[in-house]
Amino acid sequence: MLKNKTTQMADLQHLEDLVVQVRRDILRQVHAVNSGHPGGSLGCTEFFVALYQELLDRKEDFDMDGIGEDLFFLSNGHISPVFYSVLARSGYFPVEELKTFRHIDSRLQGHPTTHEGLPGIRIASGSLGQGISASIGAAETKKLNKDNHLIYTLCGDGELQEGQNWEAIMYAAGNKVDNLIVSIDLNGQQIDGATQNVLPLGNVKEKFEAFGWDVLEIKEGNNLSAVLDGMKKAKEKTGNGKPVCVLLHTVMGNGVDFMMHTHAWHGKAPNDEQLEKALSQNPETLGDY
Amino acid sequence: MNMKKYTDSGKKDTRSGFGAGLTELGKTNENVVALCADLTGSLKMDAFKENHPKRFFQVGIAEANMMGMAAGMTIGGKIPFTGTFANFSTGRVYDQIRQSIAYSGKNVKICASHAGVTLGEDGATHQILEDLGLMKMLPGMTVINTCDYNQTKAATLAVAEYEGPVYLRFGRPKVANFTSEDQTFEIGKAVHLQEGTDVTLVATGHLVWEALLAAEKLNEEGISAEVINIHTIKPLDNKAILDSVTKTGCIVTAEEHNYLGGLGESVSRVLAKNAPTPQEFVATQDTFGESGTPEQLMEKYGLNANAIINAAKKVIERK
Image (cartoon, rainbow over all chains, first blue to last red; front, top):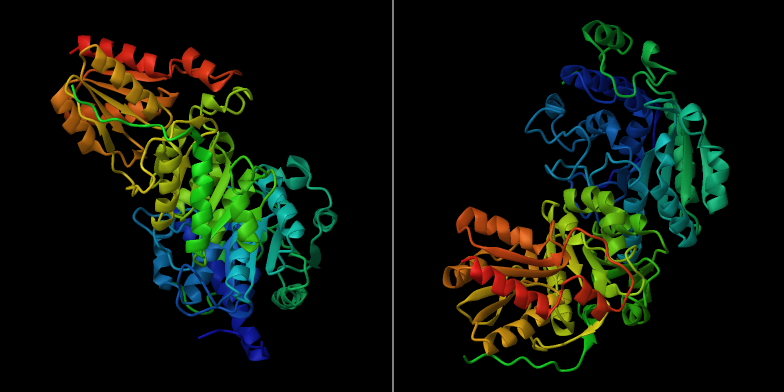
């Protein structure tokens, strides 16, 4: 069965509730093992909820080949807590399994992998800069299979410092890979600090355009309605001979006041007290695992 | 002693064997796709490109993207064959292979030409002698190094039928073509070329023909050499090696690769665990190559029949 419904007001409230619940899942996962990457995860929560609940034309049951459905690839694998939470809450595996995040013998490895057979994951990511290439490959296979579905990708902004991305960006435009939407999480932060201080990215929009991509911006990447609208516009741009890039402006650590606007929580877990404070800002909506 | 006769049916390059295999796969297996990083002619992929333009992907001089794309193309059932030089198929893209292909368990065939010093005049920047080691260390990776045109063609056909990542290594120069045209290539199965009792010669790639030449000369001197073609370095045919040394009591390994990380070390591990046996290594001695003709380089770096003969005599004395 394919999911492809129109958002109604009632649905939107449910999605907003899900966003808050996913934020709780992220915080509780990383707190439980005192490791993981909450900052980028919290910043991309609205994107993941919009993607899996509304945008992806996807099958209920997971199979690796994903023929006849849209596919998503996460390039910046370190934001696995948000990926796992949304996959679980979209029915790919039991929500209870979030308890095993980063534990030994778990399918929920520190970075996403196919190796343990976790449904929803189609390629390992973590070593940065590889997701766009894999997505292009999957997009080319869709075309060969005459499968009229889309490939979605998410990359971090700091990740664009990896050279492989630019090989892939050049390829996709040169070869008219127009069934591909690559979103860039523009939060301006990376482990060592602001991207502006670590290695300035320059004008990302102009760079993608210069390479021949169709670029659109979602200025409010932490506003669910804005993400839904922006991504639907991105979808409309596909099939026109150009790959599509979405610049998703987000705030790292969004939803937890003391984690926002800093790189400090890129890869650090909250302690007990900090967790309590963070959860109090995101009251339980759909039930904790 | 009676020896089997092997005849060179006319010198051919192993890369052309790959090209012929790929051309055939183009006709017989519609899921096979090919990717190339600006070396279509060198890899002999022109016919596939011409026959199946929609299944051929020219990625430009961008090997990292090529490996990632190949991994992604498997999702939906395609069987990607990537083509570039061995150096750019391994060292340059190790992390892409490690994460996107090996760890992700993707059905990609990494096809690597111009391996070793026989690449010749281009010199050390292009002559990788470390690739077998790099690839065999990756969990789940199958590693194959074929010896002649016919075997390379057969291996190319065989790896398409096998599900999982494969590193298929071959070379540039025209060398003796002596294995049978209609052979069936069995991944992981060593091929006995000569029966012998005094010393075991196990060789891979271009050194297999040299091992046959060495065995003939040794025979003239009254030394009976068993010759085994190890085309699959991983998984290694442990039984073939152990059975042979049980008979001969000593072994020479021969490969166009650094002695660190190559076939020789894989053989040593099997022997150390099961039947410690004197072994000599015909391989490069932890060095880079240089410019020269293939023949000059094989001579200078000790990678020919003479080197194998010397190693055999030495190892027999150590028994």
